[in-house]
Every structure is written in structure tokens, then in C-alpha cells.
Amino acid sequence: MESMDIDPENHLQRKQSLYNSMDEKFEIQKEMYRGQQYSQIYFARLHMMRTLLYSLVPNWKPHLPVCTVLGLEEGKECIIVGTLYKQMKLKPSILDEYSKERSATPLVKPHNFMHPDDHLVLEDESGRVKLGGTMITPSVFVTGVVVALHGKETSAGYFLVQDVLDAGLPPQTELPLISGEDKYVVFVSGLSIGSSTCNPLQFQLLVDHITGHLGDEEEQGIAAKIVHVVIAGNSVEIPHGLLNGQNLASKDQSRLSEPIKELDILLTQVAAGLPLDIMPGPNDPANFALPQQPLNRCLFPGSSAYNTFRSCSNPHSFELDNISFLGTSGQNIDDLEKYSEAKDKLAFMERTLRWRHLAPTAPNTLGCYPFTDRDPFLIESCPHVYFAGNQEKYETRLLKGSEGQLVRLICIPKFCETGVAVVVSSCIFSACSKFLGLRTVLVNLKMKTPPTELQNRDLAHVYMHAHMCVYVYMCVCPYSS
Image (cartoon, rainbow, N blue to C red; front, side, top):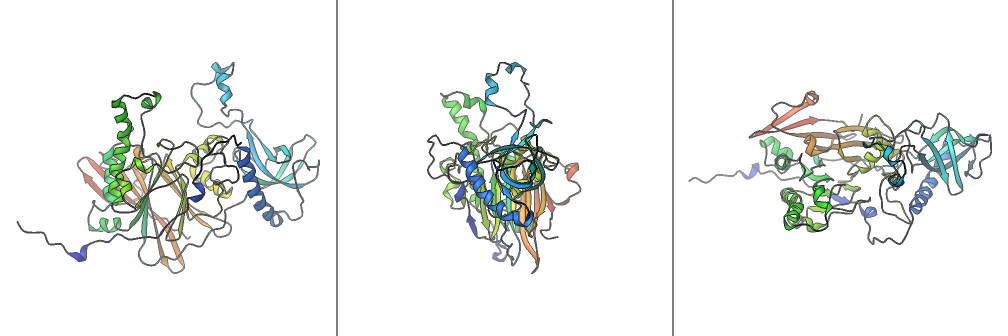
């Protein structure tokens, strides 16, 4: 048998990038519950945001005085700064379970708890005042947002709002000039291994694409440019029936661990070739309250053997070649959708950046750890890429700030339902022109033609294996206009 000659010049070397984790503020070193109240995290949030808003007021309304709620005078225009509270008629309450009229509670929970009678209240340390007027819309805001308001107190006792000032996008470091060819970062979420909708072969095709075991030389050359993979939550789904009982039979214990073992086998293939970050999600074996702490490495005996494997927190913040990334597994955006309204998920993401807070509804309607001296969800530096995992569909938009900030907003869809992963690329057209482009990898089972809604995109490659197809779409989104 003749030996196969291997041309060393055709060997592909995977590109490298400089990685810097910025998750320190989300890590809870000593978790202790000593009866601390959630009011302390609100005080910390108000203190930090009020200092910032005070610095913006002179350029916004230089002729008006700044007052506290207690210092309001009827008919006198002024500026007040405080935390919004949204009074909602349909907001769920734990006390509803013990209500005498609980039988009247609808069996189907509404997707959104908005009601026409909802109204806003502004609070500071001195008191609270009801807000009125057409300049502030309850459907836009949620409990926990810190704002500055221009208006006056009326004879009816409420504050008539004439203008609203939010913090705006935080300052941003300049996007570095990147020499040479571009590099790719793969984002995927909602693998839900162990669920009825999950097909492991689907994710295996994506793994083969990432690791360069799929496609021709051209596609392998593209795979060699992938420098990082981020899995944004909900990687496994444990059957709920197994979690109800305290004493599990040996057979049930095996079923409980099977999804995690299967995930570890797949992640080991990725970690053997390139760096991998995995974030916890609401369905993963991690703490429920934000910030979710990294998944225990003992769950991944195979992949954790590689130093390229990193178990990260949720939210997750990091830098690659001085390009900053910030994102969550989607709980913050999903909660905003329940208690406010917007045209799409990207609008909710934009609001969190303008409010400079990742999870403004925490701890009111979104569980979080009771911090006493800080609020880790405050956004102090504007990221270049801001992502949210486990969304219904893939969306992206370029957000431009008043001071030249440019942020690529990305909604990462659930992979088990859509078969879509997002690949962010970074490169430069010239010395003065930069962009962050996106490549969408679509994996579908038993599908010979692409979905109708995606046919308008550029179909770059089609991979076929047995009855499965992998569709790779190129979606170039320039970073600069």
C-alpha cells in the first residue's frame, strides 16, 4: 500500500488572539446570606448613577436647580434624580397564591404584564412622588432605572414631567486597528442537550465546521480563522420530572447525568482545537440568581483537561485583541420584555446600554444576589459587541452613540430550535475604516433548500451528510457607515 504524501505547505495554522477575561466583578468570592436587604443594592445603584447624572445636568438644563423629592415646591420647575418604580396592575405577586380570589387567576400566564393603568413613581432617599405627563411613557421604562427628570409638582401632588435624561451610552475605548486577515468568534446558545427538540448530530455538524473537519480547503481556511467560541447558556436541559423527587433511583441518576456527559464529549472536540467559553443559563446546573457563577469544572472532565476550556459567569465580559465583548444568556432581555414594550429585542438591548445597566429589573422581578456595597450590573465601559443568548431569532443592528460609540448588538437564537450560530469577524478595510461583520451558520436537518425567509441572503456553501445539510450564509455588516 502506498503511503499518502502530505504537503506541509498546505497545512493550515489556526490563528491566535489575545484573550483577557473581565468577569471579576461578576464573581462572588464569599457567598454569605446574613439577612441583608435588597434595598442596599438599590442605594448603591442610585449613588453611582446620581453622581453621573449630576455631572450631565449642567449641559442639559443649566438654568434649573436640582432638588430632592422632599424639597419639591408646587409650581416650581426643577430637576430631580431618582430610581423609577413601576406600579403594575398585572404584575405577579407571591401573595396571589394565598388570595381568596385566586380561583379567578387566569390559568395561562400572560407573555407581557403591561396594563393601561400602569404608572411610574420616582424615589430617592427622601421620599417618592408619582409621575405624570406625556413626556414619560410607562411602557418604555421599568422598575430600577435611574433617571433625571425636568418638571414641576402640581396641585394634585404628582410631578409633571417635561423632559427626561438618561445616562446615555458609557464611554468607549477606541476600536483597535487590526492588521492582517480577519479573525472570527463563534457565538451559539440554547443547545438544550437532553431536550426533546435537540438533535446531537446537528451540533456535531457545527463542531465539525468549527474544528475544520467539514468542507473543502476554502472552508477549512475559514475555520482556521476562528479564534474563539462562546456558548451563551442553556447548554443542557434536565427532565423536570427527575428533579421533583429527592431520592432518585440509579436509573434516574444515570438519566440525570447523560445530557452533561454528552455535552462534555462535544465540547472536548472544540476545546482540543481552540479556546472555548461556556456560560451558564437558566436551565443549566448553576445558581439561579444573577450573576450566575461559572459551571463547576467537575461537570466537564474531558473538556476541562484542556487549558483552552473556560467556565465563565453570566453576565460575561471579555476582550479579544482589545475588542471588548459583553453579554448575557438572555434573562435580562427576556425580563424586560415581560414588563415593558419595544419593537424588537434589540431595542431592549439598546435601552440597557443607554440606562448603563445590564439588568435594571433585578432584584425586583429578576433574581440576583443581595449585594450590599456595589451593583455589579452597572455598565461603566461601552462594549464593542453586546450579545444576548437564547432569543427566538437572529437579529443584529449597529448602535451609534452621541460621542462616537459604535456597538454591534446581536441576538443569538436558540440553536436547538433554529440551528443558527453567529460568527463575528473583525478586520479593517483601510487604515481609517473598520468594521465588525457577521457570518451566520445555519444547520438544518433533512432540508434540501434554505428557509424562505433566508433566501435573500448570500448562500456561501452547502454541506450535505446523509440526510442532513449545513447551510452557511454570509451576512456582512460594516462597522463604520
